[in-house]
Image 1 (cartoon, one colour):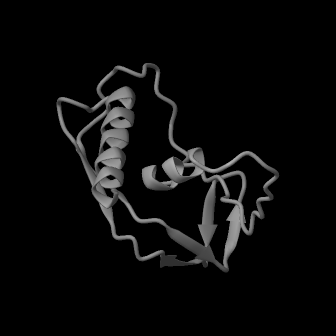
Image 2 (cartoon, rainbow, N blue to C red):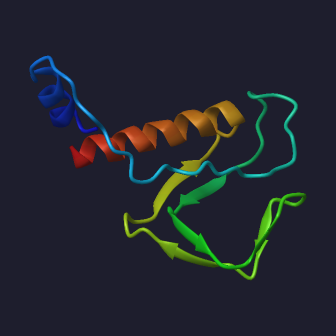
Length: 109
């Protein structure tokens, strides 16, 4: 919920309410070689995120890869995170990605 929606919920009167869930999000995973440390440098570059839907194709649970699948962006736009010497560890990538998400979210509110 956006902040304004949360504030509206807090001011409602006590009573019985029902909620209908129309669709649940599905988790996704990335498969990569393991890292020995969350703080060791692992490289630099740019991470690009584009959220959407994978359709068709076949998922191989062993390799974690789809073959013959199509991808349709949800239209929210591509987001990037630059990885450099200041954030080039697993912990740094996590923190930089979280910071970018918070900036985008704050910008939308």
